[in-house]
Amino acid sequence: MLFVADSAKGKIQEIMQKGNLSDDYFVRVSVTSGGCSGLTYNMDFDNESHPNDQVFEDNGLKIVTDLKSFLYLFNSTLEFSGGLNGKGFFFQNPNAARTCGCGESFAV
Image (cartoon, rainbow, N blue to C red):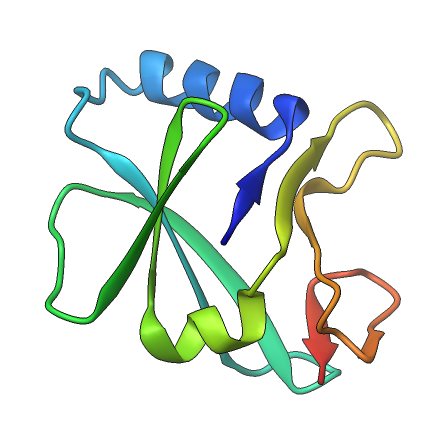
């Protein structure tokens, strides 16, 4: 399962509304190689499903990820932190053994 915190839900809904994205769009998250810790999170809006997608609904939002990324993201929570010292979107990932200083990459 993937989870969405209230903070992330509010910001995602705001971005979708400003971008005039219809209700058939969802949040696609993935994990790719890169960053100083080895793996990097990616997040975008999408409206096309793929055959091996894993689909989750939490807190009123649909989150989609590919099967490989789900293995790294299992039981993670998408959060948002704003303000001057905010991180933007980030994951609370119980599978990450370590993260880099900026929080944008991780290792398992």
